[in-house]
Image (spheres, one colour):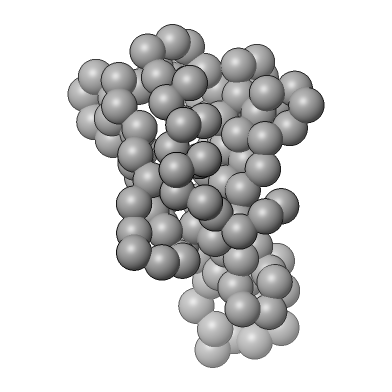
Length: 116
């Protein structure tokens, strides 16, 4: 993955607009490792292969971390803390946020076909 370039990522987000696409959205603050420390409050969210159709997609911010939103017919999908991105050979747009020590904190991914 490479650091987010707003213009490039924005162009790729727009290519997914106004058609059915698959969404992967995940957040974590260490849920996989926090079970050894009972004083640490762990929270996260995970959704994979939600079929959505958004009319407007936007990535914003003055510097990393950035935030991205997808406008649905009746609401929004939103992620913040985004730092890196890549476009796969399969045409999937992967946008992620990594902590300063490189751990995944958030992922927002779009695909023209279901994720495996």
